[in-house]
Image (cartoon, rainbow, N blue to C red):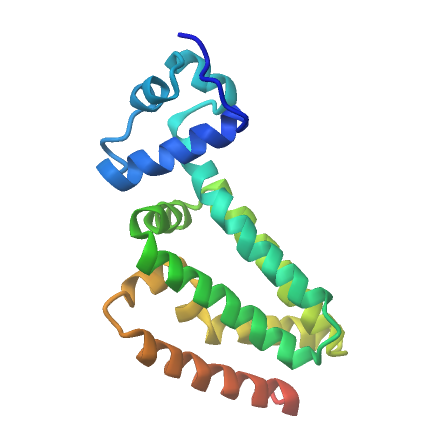
Length: 198
């Protein structure tokens, strides 16, 4: 089949089509053949861009996770006070996850599954976010040993809000309730870090 006339790059078009198919049919019923048919190409040609269905699905997740990573990086680069940065990063990540869960649950569930299985897309995202939080903690001027403890405390206390599986499990908790819980946890976290008692 001939490639469709489009100014959009083929790989981006395939990602959009894959996301649409997953939203309409679910992951199990989404096939590379159906995506290729809609893109007006052979399924063999799809594999030139993505070596497997899993790679295509993970690229769909990567597409929206990049925005979260860029947001965290921008916050880190800002001249704001250290603990303001930390709070904004944690709030930004949690809010982005919750927004995706509410507005695009089937695509969010791809990320939940990738995290549960420890796939590369989830590992790379986690490493990038941890790197930005680490930059903030380093900026706080803690000793190397205290930096390690601070990072452990941050991720332990905020697990419910940063782990995609936990965010998914809280789907029935109202937005107002989960945000109030998040604010209480972050206030306690910032007090503890500020006092250096960890």
